[in-house]
Length: 394
Image (cartoon, rainbow, N blue to C red; front, side, top):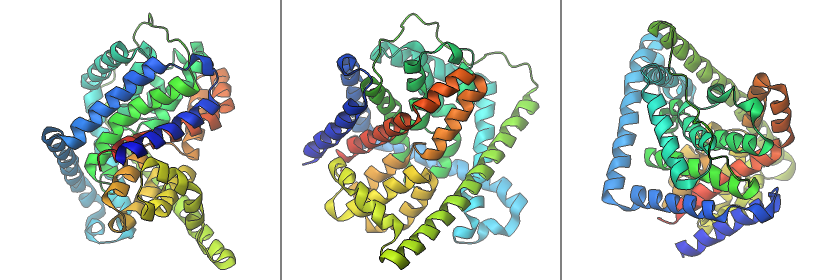
């Protein structure tokens, strides 16, 4: 039965992608086959072997340990707040550790460890999947650095990119999540699903691009590298990353206040006028998609509601709701929706990406704005693909 739902999920993703495709005759089936095979291999090793399960557990434990280290600084500044239970301290428990993780990312970047990993992992991905050097490099770097910062690593190339290549890198940016966010996600979603989603989403974004946005990659590009030299003093760089992490935490907090309040308002209003909450209504709209992904029938409305909530608001809002509902869902439904939620595919991110590209180059920003809805749909299909693959093992 799991194989049947894998096929229905794949059929849905391909059908929507084919309908959106800019050139159906050039859909890159060979590349799709290679990337999909990598996804099956990675998901099998991670979720269906003792070694993979052990590795995921250790990675999850490592991020939990990082969160515990972060609490030292948070506790020092905010005192007893972090000791209290409940949603009132979400900002301190979940978001403030982003500051610490961002500092670690800054150290790893300054010491050239991250540039080395990104460069050679991107090189290996390109050799296997033949997606193009720039596209492969960017797919890896966006999963570590996140956006909008990742666009700065290719700012000199962006004005020279065609619309097709621009779409591919933007799709990767929407489908991946930054390393600074992983520990916070793991406070609401099981760590093993977060880690698997990071791996799968890198490849899912490229698969969707092969369908929606097919073109022959330029294989003779010089591999883009994060600038190796950093003339700024270490502590100045570290301070910048710490402040960026704090700004990110505050921004996410502000978005959550606005979006959660809006959803609460809509739920109350719909309940009064229609006898049904807004989230339940959109759950019925997305329930058929959840079903073809393999979500058990008794969970499809709740999972559909979470899928829509993420699209309309952001992944944090949906994860917060999932954290409350998880005990009422089956293991398979939890696995599928958890992986689906680990990406930046929502309306707000489209605005962030468009603004980031526009700040680098006005013309390129216009191109991104023109295909923004196609970009959002493609990134959502990538999340559906990743969730569907994980459902195969539950």
